[in-house]
Image (cartoon, rainbow, N blue to C red):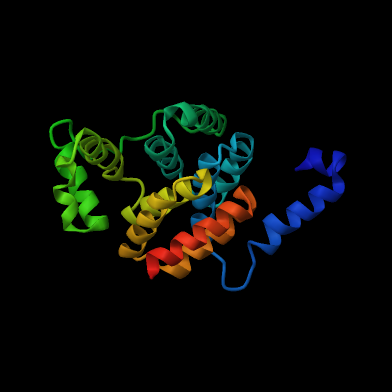
Length: 228
């Protein structure tokens, strides 16, 4: 923000007040610092805010988000955004971590093998959405990929809890827009894991400065549908 304070002082004053003070301290809409920064990182991936992500990442690490947690957020984004949109963020996090003296690669977090990733992925889907998901992978190759790749390769990793993974998925979907059916489904998944309606609205509130009002209001509507 320093350059904007010089070139656009009125804009910087109002933006910093809103995003870094008013929103953060809004009564009833607060999150603990680690969760707030994790949600913002996921949101910036979702809306493709590369420059702001590079500014936010050191703040998140200073607030207690671990390098493993930050990396897991970036890795999981590939399932919801595609590698074409995530690769620049992977380059950013590698550069920032290296500059901070973190040795790469980080310790491995995988818990599945190529042989059991489908089975374990379907189990993770069932843990989130219900036992009917144990057979959902049989409904075509994309559903099979969803179980084996999205859930088997990523959701089964350590480094983040299942509830944290559903929270960042909610942020990916809300921030990119146009994914409202999936956003409703993952709002329900979050609630199934204990991330209740009030928590999800707090997440949207803390991420609003980074994605704007239309997508934030859409996300709230999806939460309402999921909780009905």
